[in-house]
Amino acid sequence: MACKILTLVEHESGAIRDTTFELLGLAHRLAGEAGWSASDIKALAIGQDLAGPASSVAARGAAEVICAEGEAVRDYTCDGHARVLESVIGAESPEIVLIGHTPNGWDCAPVVAAGLGVPIATECSNVAFENGRPLFTRKAFNGKFIQVVDLGDARPKVATVQRGASPAFGGGTPGTVRVVPAGVAAGELRAAFAGVKKGETGAVDLTQASVIVSGGRGVGAAEKFGVVRELAAALGGQIGASRPVTDMGWLPHEHQVGSSGVTVNPKLYIACGISGAIQHIVGMKGSGYIVAINKDPDAPIFGVADVGVVGDLFEIVPALTRAVKEAKGQT
Image (cartoon, rainbow, N blue to C red; front, top):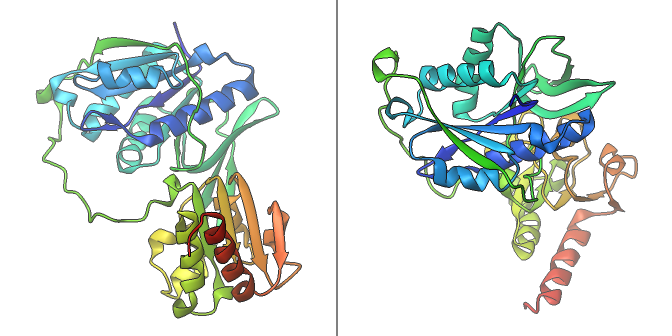
């Protein structure tokens, strides 16, 4: 049976990547907005021996997981995955195809869209229905502008979605797994998988953090970030930053939240000395609970905050840190 939304499963060494469940969370929200059923959501896993891991996807958001298996697609190659994805899209006729904006996703998604002759919205921070049409929010001109894109009447509508742009699907579903042949032979592929080289361990991944304490230009200098670090450590969270902070080299770019950084949706987001430029707000406004601390009572950040504190962050943040430690029984 055809589906309305098809999501692409990402996996590594038999484990399903978190971005898969984020896409399914977004798919369920979109289905609700469009008046579609949860049974209209399917997922595609491409590889070999994936029926076991795919069952976790069927249990967490997908009405059906299609496992396209074959030795030629055991490991990722752009043309291998693109061929399978195009074939499955042709068979399932989805309205929307959601792919993670990951190295694999941004590699193969444009090839798929070109092969199907449809437009694509890349690196989306949000997708939502408005007046019965899905609109895709994405950054442009290196994050200086935000676009809201209507892909017209083309079917399917293909989009890559930023990691952390949507909460992961948290419910349970009685989905099924269907194994089908990939239909791709190694001799047909123009590229061959060579291997994976892992990056350095310990890299920051703000998209998976449940608590983020971010500092902005108002912190004043790199050496003054100690108060932000201490609060983040007390809360068991990660350190974020606005673009001016990373531009000035106070923190590495991997800490940057916003349209030219990463989109996050932690349970708690604390903004310290961040005025709230739209480029920053678009990257964190989906957080569960937002606390803003700024000396300027007219700072735009207060417009999205659940709690706003007007005052000196160097007085307020250390006091918060002490309160957290006391509540945890720490000295």
